[in-house]
Length: 447
Ligand SMILES: Nc1ncnc2c1ncn2[C@@H]1O[C@H](COP(=O)(O)OP(=O)(O)OP(=O)(O)O)[C@@H](O)[C@H]1O
Ligand SMILES: [Mg+2]
Image 1 (tube, rainbow, N blue to C red):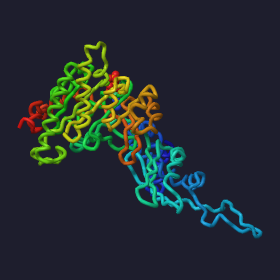
Image 2 (tube, helix red, strand yellow):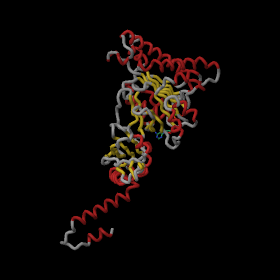
Image 3 (cartoon, rainbow, N blue to C red):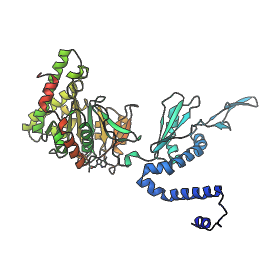
Image 4 (cartoon, rainbow, N blue to C red):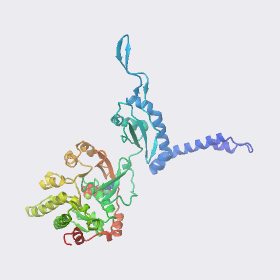
């Protein structure tokens, strides 16, 4: 304020030197940014990152690199660490260490990245081990060390937890049988691709976000030429919102059994067509003969297996046999399963474990006990068992998903589809819902 008053009071005719002007304007901009920073960061994180966060982080990276590299043993001595003293060879730590060469930090949406040239003898794992120290030195949320090119490592810093910021995906189409359902901790879209992973199992405690994931998948796949079939054993309260876009919807086990049997019949028809054409899967058929893919959503799968009386045994057997057949044969015949439940283990009967082993795509939401975590991840990613129990209850929709590039697991969060959005999608794309009979004809069995 005082600076502004002084400027106003400057005698007329005596121009204020340009350097002073720039200094004052610069001071005002920096001062304004500093005071608006916490608000800007909360309300508009990307704008904050562009204006204040990124330049400050760049300065921190460059300023701390020498010290960081030394403390984390990433700097090496140029001269040999062996020396001859009084005719004795001694090994010591050279006084002058050379830090690894660092590129200028590059901008990334909500983060930055730098490329480091490895010293001979170094491996990327050494940088991954130092990532936690970089997080603190650079005051960012996370740093990942990625090695895409031999001899170099890319350090990718994320300014904030992308999972903590609500978002709406802007991707209209993610490719056939592929859907953007949320965001990964690396800041990129979380895609579920049923061509790559034909069957998916999502497990999590109550209110961990399973049905929200199914809604996000349905809302995206609804825009494609795909038949969507729902088995929602909580009275179809969730999938009922999409009813107009669904080819069939079962809300109880009694309805699910015949529906699943019908899907197995459709598969058998498709199989006959493939045999007649001499191909191994529907995807190898000529384009005109390719049937419409079918995605079957099963929410609260345990309800299919639980028996209160022996009279229900036949229903359970019917559902479990059909699900297993779809799991075994569906991938080649364009029939996919997306199964969600709180548990899906041997306590539900031997059928459950056999089906589970067919569901290779695993999504683990928050679980309450180690047994369930092992049930979902034990056979595919035993290392992630502890991480899934650490997911906090105040971030529903957060899950661990497999990372196809590294074979490891990543944290991810779904985006929420509101009731209005679900109804709107169902309405808008209702015309894309084929009837069950059309699927049969397209499968070639009745043709
Ligand atoms: N990604 C998300 N962001 C914010 N809120 C979410 C997210 N995912 C789910 N929720 C909220 O968490 C609550 C529980 O979600 P959801 O119904 O999907 O859980 P669920 O695992 O299906 O639970 P249940 O086993 O009881 O059916 C809902 O109120 C939902 O809006
Ligand atoms: Mg649910």
